Structure formats: structure tokens, C-alpha cells
Length: 407
Image (cartoon, rainbow, N blue to C red; front, side):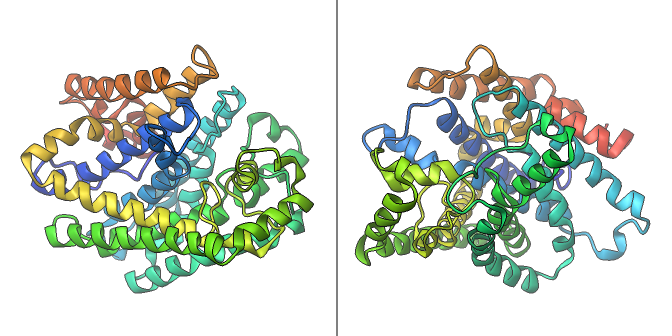
């Protein structure tokens, strides 16, 4: 749950309307993560719609914002401004990814009851580096193609590795690195079969990177267009999936497939979602109709379009709000939390591995959602004139990758 290094350290109106808005959206994603991890189960009724809205979209939003933040961090840099030698150019990236991967492996080994995403983020950042050199038109075309190509690869390659109808959705753990077999399984999880594999989640990074290149949030009209086009993309993605499953008979065909290939899911209230919750970021390979759904964690082309549209709309809306003094004040708790997303993520995983293990109630959600923004805001107030103001782990990560320049 960490973005690219901040693009600049100024505190003027440009930063308020751009980076602060992105931090606020990331803060909202943190709250969505809390809703999924410690809230009650998603029920489409009453307050349960809040959990439904967060289910599956929080990790997608984090990943989209990672790409968007990479674009902001590189805005204004030309290729000739990049260090010429390999060590100066790639050493910070490798160190950053190694730290994220280490944190992810350790947290996953603690059994906090959640699917830890940090090791996957390390792979996303490594994979994104070559794409940061593409021109905006080429990057946009590649991002659009990846939305379809990634899920299709997941669908087609699953059976090749022995995961046609089950066995996907895991996260790498530290103990798996003890032998060659575990290393191979870990690599497969990171790239194809895990809970947030590169095949189906990296398209969000590319879409975010393209959006960050094309959209300058300092301009109000650009933010308005992002909000409008994002809402249209979300409606088209989710709407097309609804039509395919409920109007064109896709759901009934999937129920027939589930009866034959996934009988363990038949007793669930919604067998389709039960299968998807067992697969998480991988697309089941038992029917082409799986590629037409947009349920949480399905990671199909239509869900990716819908989730990316939600992210684009939120960035545009929050950028518009941050342009006004009153809006910026309202967003301040979310902005503080989003600026410290990595620290918040690691701390909440440690709490879930210990005193709050197994928490799943509205009370637990209220506690996490109330304490985290307040604590982040208080931290930033206390360390306002210090490099620590963006969070303890964020500061340590910058020190490790930039040395004394981060101070």
C-alpha cells in the first residue's frame, strides 16, 4: 500500500490540488480495506452496501494509485535527466521492492487473517519500470490492451500449471523460500495464481500510469473530465457484465459449470461469488463465461474496466474538492491517512495478527476507521516540520532508497 515517491515537496496550491487529492483517495482505499478486513460480511442491504462497495475495489484502487503516483513522481523529468549508470538508476528501485517484499512475506507468515498484498506490490513496481519510458500514446494503448490480455492469460495458463478449477488465491510466505519447490510456487503465485497476481492486477498499474501521464489535476476541467469519464467507464464495465450474466444467460451457464466442476460451492448463498472468493485474483478456467462477470475479485476485463473507472472518477472528484479550501479541510483526515498508507497497512496487519485476530463486526470497523485517520492526522501535526511527517515506514523506505537526500 505504497505509492511512488512524492513528486516534489512543495506545499503550494498545485500540490494541494494534485498530490493531496491522490493521498485522499488512497486514504479512502485504506478505509475500504478496513471494511473488508474487519467489518461484517458484505450484504446488499442497508449499511451492508458499504462493505459491498469496498469488497474487491480496495486493492484495485491501491494498485491503480500506485501507477498514477509513479506518473506524478516522474512528471517533468526528461530521459536525459535519468542517471546513466545502472547502479544509480535501478538500485533505489531494487531496494524499495526488496523491502516491500520482505515486509509482505513476514506479515503473511504471521497469519493476520488477511491476504497480504505487499510482496505483489514489489513485483508491480519492478515490472512497471520499463513502461515508464513509453510515450503517452503508446503507454495508453498498452494499458488498454493489458485490460483484456491479463485476464485472458490467467484463464488460459491456469490449467497449464495445474490450477484449472482450484488451488489459486494464495499469498507467498517466508517459509516457502526454504527450497526450490517453494521458490517456484512463490514465483507462480506472484505472477499468475496468487491473490493479487501480476497477470490480472498489473493492468491497474498501467492504467494508472497512463492516467497520470494524460491528466494534469492542476486543471479543473481535467479533473471534471476524469470524474465524468471514470463514472462512464464504471457504468459500462459493470453494466456490460450485468447484461452478459443476467440478460444473455451467462449466470445460468456458470451455475451449470459450478455443479459439474465446483460442487463445493453449491451450498453457498451465491455459488458464483463463492467460486470467485476461492480464486481471488485468478480467473477460473472452467468456462469462458467467467470472463464476462464483474463480481469482486473476479479480475476479468469487465471488472477491471469498472474498478478502474471508479478509481478515475474518485481521483477527479477529490481533485475538484481539494481545489476549494473547505473541501481540502474535509479531505484532510483522508489525506493524512493516505500519505501514511504503508504504515497504516503494516500496523493494521500486526493488530489483526494479535489482539484483533478474527475481528469482523461494525464495532471493529468503527474502531479502525476512527482511530487510523485521527492518529495519522495527529502524527502529521506533531512531525509537521520533520521528514517523518509522511509516516515512519514511509520515511524509513525513503532513507533506504535515497540515503541522506531523503532527510
